[in-house]
Image (cartoon, rainbow over all chains, first blue to last red; front, top):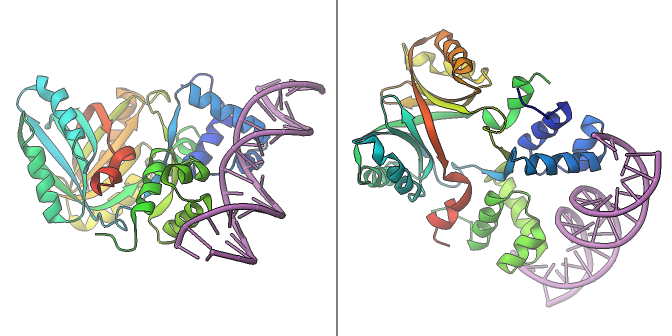
Length: 157
Length: 157
DNA sequence: GGTGAAACTTCTAATAA
DNA sequence: TTATTAGAAGTTTCACC
């Protein structure tokens, strides 16, 4: 399915997805190649755009952000979608935003301190021009599947 | 709002969120402290659970995963929620899953190669015991706000 | 708390296989 | 493509502010 990417690449990716700060020497030891090889592979994957970067995983709860919700957005005219996305991006509490097909014209995720903070953020979203109405789905519990096993499972290493 | 976290911590976090592999020496230079200080601060933030780790940001498109959707799940009995979450986590294409209040009992995000792959994943979700019905919202465009400016904007550094 | 320097580890690029 | 190697760079510890 993906061309020019082999088992070694996928194994390196899997280690780095689990811990982006893992030293190349340690990855090398684990998969039985030299550190230099790991280094060259990572550089190639970066060049190809497969690796976009590395980001710290922050615990929002500990940061005082314990309120997570998805906000479905009903949009009047589809042609407003791009403009609405641009405006959503200006709200820092909106951590992810998607133009969608289905019952909502857009769907976004918000991270807030508490309900009162969320209220203000939702008001802000409602006030974005082109937004007709929003519908909130409060997250009571969240599981992230992403960071860990993706490739190992999908590509059956 | 958050106790025992100062401007230096937030600045370090901001740099590491943007690029988790940024050397401490460079962060130190940027914010005007010593590399040793950055090191100690990061360790403390890790110990406090504020930093959970670091993860590679992978380009799903380049990996051949160009289909993203949110799947709203209607659940028969709320008491099944936990069991359903556990089962959702077993599907690797489910990258995020949330128990929610609102029109859906759960909401998850899926990453697939194409529509035919997505069809199979959605069937799998439908087949999870306790799931009554699902509703898909296909993402036509995605913006991630998360990784970059969060703290800078929220805490007005 | 923070610093700066020493000791140690890792990275990186070039060369060789 | 991979391994080796050596110099550069980064990390970590610690005695001292």
